[in-house]
Image (cartoon, rainbow, N blue to C red; front, side, top):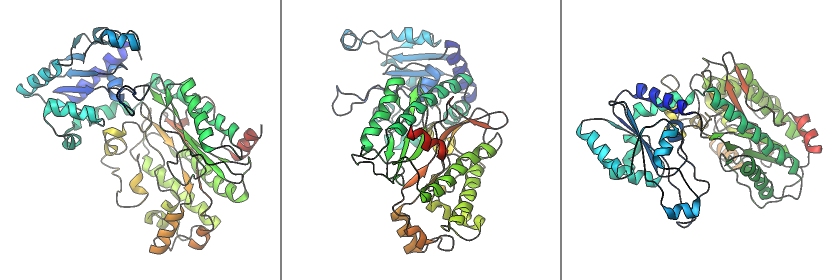
Length: 464
């Protein structure tokens, strides 16, 4: 939690941006994993509620009456049974005072507050819900069916939250930096453990353990697999095999802020020549972002600059051919890079994605192209501003079923060498990812220590 003044200032700014009406920010409740008394642990509070009200306890709702310039924390005090099992928790009024809110009320009062607002003709603003219990609560309070709540969510509130949370305050950047330092420990642990005969699940479990030991836990389910061509490959019981590549995409959450890094490593400790040729392309694309990402530049333009560089280098290997600009315009590069260069990051590892990616990653001049494979997966295209935190995560993947499909359809055949591509079906995939802070005149990677990724330093580290 930050200072009380931080939350007072944030709520005041939110009122100015929204302008009128009743803002209702729902906190999260505990969610049962497989039966009621076995919840997912630890409970994760809603990020926007945290941003404005700062409290982690379940069963809370923040209400801001913009027209009356009042704020209220809604929730019920816990009873003695909860105290016996979970320990003492401050009262709702004490929690409210910690973040500068003077008024509180029990949860039963929320219905009356909303009814009174509707009678006065006030707009009731809420964000798109993503948990079923919140959807049920909104249906009971506002009579909006869960299927219609995403469309009924307040666009002015979404836009205000996105505007505020996109630009990170210095204290937020410090928190992300600390999370990145734990990310360093997670990934270097994986690099020390990778060797033939160890299971994917063992390495993935050790990585998760670092996050649980040094932070609040992982910021997303750890990806660790020798099948790096699968974007979200979960650790399996498969044994690591010499000569293959292992991809680790992992991050932690610390003090409510996230890290997200990816490294790809040779299982035997040394890259083969073919692996090194492809790896060096991803390395060059990853580092090129440092040269071109800065305030005022559209991240979509950075993405396509990387795609052109990748295409040029893949042509040198004989995997692509033809005019580079025409190949990228046709989407031929998506055979190798079917996702975007990166996404916003902060309190959520895909920051604010639940508010609608069209509002978070794009604006009027950078609407995503949803018709083209690969380009339809861009999560971030808008103009960069100082204080933005985005991921830089180019990759090259050889997906056997995609190769077969495009060959069969003749898709982009003028730009792709399918005969040579067939020989790479056993290759896997490579991704290198770091977290990028946009500064006043450029950008820099976050984290006080860089996880090894340049080929020689990576091989030397793994050999220790």
